[in-house]
Image 1 (cartoon, one colour):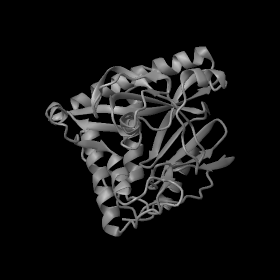
Image 2: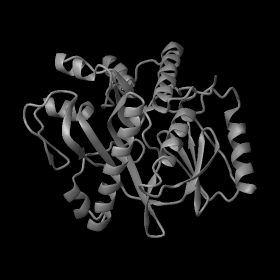
Image 3: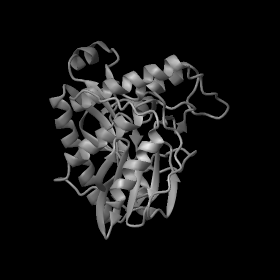
Image 4: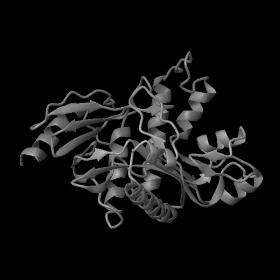
Amino acid sequence: MSALTQTDFNFPGQQSVYHGKVRDVYNLGDRLVMVATDRISAFDVVLPEGIPFKGQMLNQIAAKFLDATTDICPNWKLATPDPMVTVGVMCEGFAVEMIVRGYLCGSAWRAYKNGVREICGVKLPDGMRENEKFPTPIVTPTTKAAIGEHDEDISKAEILAQGLATPEEYEVLEKYTLALFQRGTEIAAERGLILVDTKYEFGKHNGTIYLMDEIHTPDSSRYFYAEGYEERFAAGQPQKQLSKEFVREWLMNNGFQGKEGQSIPEMTPEIVAGISERYIELYEHITGEPFNREADENLHARIERNVTEYLTK
């Protein structure tokens, strides 16, 4: 199965295109077409090989969770005319990503074990352990970096001082973030999973704040298996994860963390196939449904056909 890593569509009504790290966004004026490619990024770097089926999985997971949270806040999704595509409302995005953490792990843990006790203006107590649950989830925003640049931690006070959101807007962003995380936590629990942390992006359309982009996918979220969590935590053992962290760990084990002078390790066909299978495992656990492997080798032609039919009907 081939991987879709580059797109050059020209959809009806198209005005411009933005190629992101993983998604390509086609601007139609009042609407946009977001193509979830098979590109994969880690440490804010796009890796050289695409991962077959990855785009389809991420798009379908996101669509499912967007549909499951419409009672919490409005979102940008209008339709999914292709397994790798969502068509939605054009929003003016906030220049921050709202990250919410239920547990101390990942980059937060790496900072914590190096002595950091405040993240994005949120003070953390001494004596916490890796993968320990916070008493209540914490919101730790980052800047929304352009491709090739790194996201940076930012506090609520800095967001307001820089005019990235008004106090009223930030209150809504935080309220939506915590409510979405609670819903995601409940759905994950039904699947025998723990939603550990995730990120949300928001924008405005006609003065209303909308949830944008993906939601609760393994690229934007980290999951633990609930079974055995307490035992592993008590024993100081690594948790069994469902997230993209396994890709980051493979890169770190091979000397790459996105720092200057470091080289991305070779992504052999075996490595690529293994990552693809792990993503399929993520999909099936998160959704509770078997993954339907789309067999069409000409992904570009299929997407162009399906999206054009939708836009012109």
